[in-house]
Image (spheres, one colour):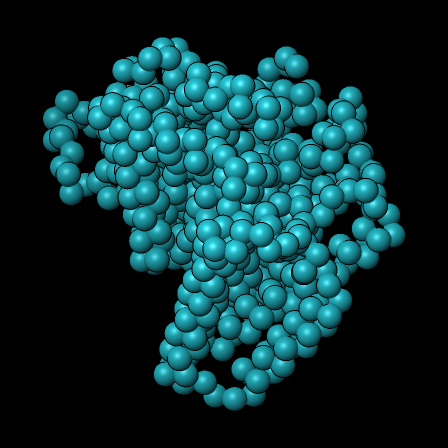
Length: 529
């Protein structure tokens, strides 16, 4: 009886967070054959279960629930308000959709219909209102992420300990890896896990913890190399820019930033060596992978970063000097972005005949740009322009892209690509068409509010959330919404709203003294192929 009394909403929420961070990313029931359904069921059931249990326990702890005054608008954060508005728009969109049950279930697309949106909201609520953020659960997330990276590398060189690739076609054996299946979705996951490890390494004060997070950084990055995914570089690049600005304030953190650069370069060299010795020579590569594994870049980048670490340690750097460094970083990033945009405009509209080779997929926009993303974006923006006003505001219904594309461009898609698009491959366009202008606007405001909360947080763990949020959001411009990483992104948005756990938020915690939690519950996924 005493054990029952000691059960609190906070403890249940902690178990829920552990389930979403340590079990959800790797749970499988039939290898890759039903991975989407398995993750969908796990997340929706877990989110609803832990929210319901936390709410029931909280209500039971209230002395006089009938006399509780209703909450005021000031009791809610801006993220709470924008997520609530996002859900409300989704409800209107789903129940006014021409596609009925499909908009609720997401069955015509990637199972990101109304039910999944509500599930992400339940997860957001039980985490943001009942969970007190600490490093404990994130340590396990780091362990899982590192394990996934190493496992992906083993698969990449032909070793598959769990036989997950068994039964797949030759093409799918190249496109599926680790515990996320599709390489682009695995890359999306890494854009959450790797930036978190990067931040924690830079700002950890205890030596053991910093070593742990550096190991996670290296293991996760080598897993990232196996994805051969350009979208991941977009996310990790954005995370590096933000991290450089955050660390360029004091000597220790700025030195660690350059240590991360060295880690990336050396890890890239190790990956290239392993690929040369054991990899499949017919396995496709990518331009960013080829660049980062170039021995000349590895040598020069490592040397420059090492010299930077020595210089930072040797000389006193004033706040004014750090301010100049941050401004230089911003100027450089803006210059690179402007140059990239100018090159796209030039080779798309001016010099349309120049041979660009493998760079044509980056600098010449066409229907085939980004492996067909140019086509999907163009056609979906045309579809949005054709929608009636009320559909422009609330969309065609959650995850209903497939209906809109097939009804208008089915023959053309099959002629050009051999398949039809059921997703925009850009989350903002996805929400613009399916949830309308209001849905997309509330989503962007939700992300902005979470970033603002993270920057203003008074503990390291909450502040660390800024990097996964920025990285995922950046990669989402060329990636898809799906039940394996998109819900996890909303979970990380929720972490920015959590209260601090006085006994467990500091990165000074000694992980060697932590007990291993006992998990008595077991969730099983669907076994359909």
